[in-house]
Image (cartoon, rainbow, N blue to C red; front, side, top):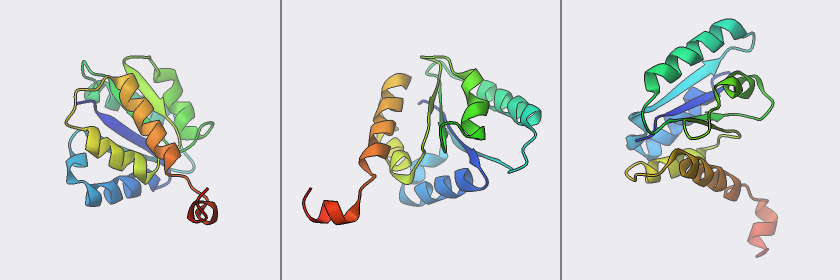
Length: 135
């Protein structure tokens, strides 16, 4: 199973992971949340992230889900990016985490897991009025 770390500004990581766990309790195993304070000490946060990734590291790799590309969480994670070992998907949302729960029992490579979660997150974004009109 590929460990997943949700890394965001404020309390978003904790809140979104708690919500996902209400839907799928299997998201307790090998899934963790890290919240960054708004006035983050980037050196301390980088050291903490390094420690967590080392602890979570497995032969299957680690997936980091962040809130937004260009934000502090993603910027802290990017130096750890190693294709096939540590991957990052930005724009974390609840449908991504629900999809993660449905994929947890399968032996899926890190890059495929990352791609499937990104797609699930993108597919969940809708303009309700257009969707309901049948577009």
